[in-house]
Length: 117
Length: 114
Image 1 (tube, chains in turn red, blue):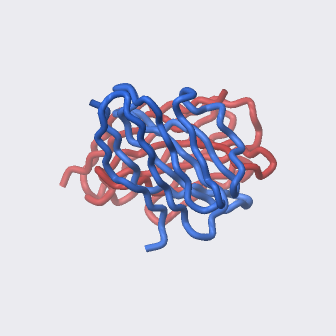
Image 2 (tube, chains in turn orange, brown; image 1 turned 120 degrees about the vertical axis):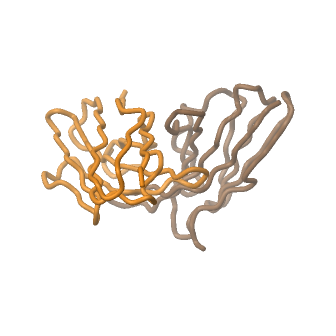
């Protein structure tokens, strides 16, 4: 079974600074997807960024980028120019690629990101 | 708004009662997922549907939990004989079958069992 570990229960960063959230995972599969989701307080889960394991290039979405190290099974999220609206729980998630079939996501426990004004 | 919707948003019930939650997916999405999220944890996958077919249900927490998607549109999750340990946020997500199959989440239903 796959597992996802987020070792930082809480992180704090000054507004406009850069922060990196860590995620490691364990799998025996070679094809899979990795995601970062954001869950603001009392609001729904929002997709931040997605990475396909077969792609060597790290995904980027505006201020958000990932450092995907497949051999190390590491998938960190970097947030540049942090904004107050970035404050949320961030979850790392894994999904198998079973020939295009669907499957549930396996989530880590989350990292609570605090933005200091 | 054409996102995933869930009703009710909050449900308070007494132990032993049955509860049912509804999820309406994004209209063109043919896959629908249910998750449970307890305090301080990430969501835990329960079950999913592709159209009307429930393709994975082994992760349902007990035989008190059941889900349906009768016409391949909305879905319901029922918990029978609720227990205090069932108190949690129940999340629904939907996706469009395809290469990336990204899941989009609803706001959740928060269940409190007294």
